[in-house]
Length: 461
Image (tube, rainbow, N blue to C red; front, side):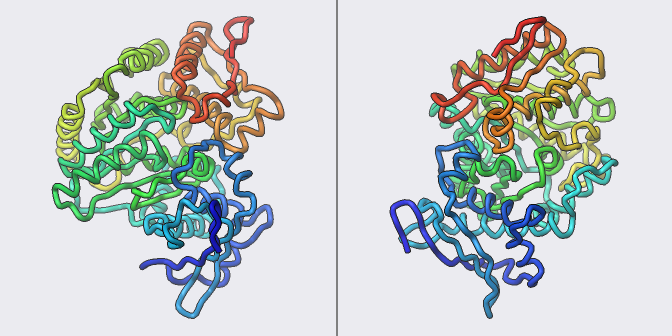
């Protein structure tokens, strides 16, 4: 049954995950609070809602409140029975193949994390958490040994203008010409552009096994639906494990213009690199954008220097409007990474040596109380400050697009952040620039700040 907006269909896997046990099926269909159904349904809806212009998890769930999905056991294997799914996922009544693959990646990851790894995210030891990240990636077959470092992580905003989007494609094209795979947050905007550009270059170079890795997490996936170029979709349990997966799996990082989420990623990476155990570990980090993005990166650079210091700024380079130079510098950086890992007997496929402090690993669920209690002062180690600033930005992302965060704001009003006056002014300037440049949400007209910055006795939204 097909309408202009909704499709009902039965979907079978292409070549993997053909069988599930009755217990696994029951867990996916368990609608109790502790069951997996709501999580499973939300992630599958996100995959089917590819290309959406809505970046609010709450709005997506309301738009498709009649969407249902069941797992059926058939004599030849399993089958997904879906009702009232977004019609954009289908062509002439047939599901798009890339979306089909991503649907069964959801089944794989939701079951594995739920059954094998477990939902207890309060692990005390950072080694145990890193091992959990490794297990999830290995189970998803994302760990590829015996291949020299060639996977480039691309971060950037989902809400970017056409000029910036076209530039991300050009950078992706240059990366693809050099044989590099691309890993992003798997959504639209700067997460889709590099993959789209790389596909053309890979086709020219006759690279038939190119990697387009998309890493998401349940809280954000509905607001940033996976784009169909992704051929390896991985859903991590939370944002902290998602960020760790990026830096363990990837070999270099490129950052395009973005909003609060991109700033969160920058603070995460710089905080990790600032730890004394990581001073000698090479990990190329390049900020880049088209002509006209100079002011954006000046604001980012100023904020980093005012909060974390010049030492943090030494860990990245800024290249404006030069995709060839970006790719060339990344190639040189990856050669250095390869030499270092050879010399230290480190694996090519997973960066075990990188030390990630526990503060960057423990899940942060933003509430008004937790946001208000964040230590945003210079009276702490620079990497600890980076961790707390990242949590502040993570809370703003939640308030912008995540269902739970949006509910917090609707119930209690904006989050309030306070700290050293100069630091608060720097943070206020950064966030104000995102609002002015319309980087907080796709539907800018609907955006209302979900935060207040308290500078002294005054609070500014």
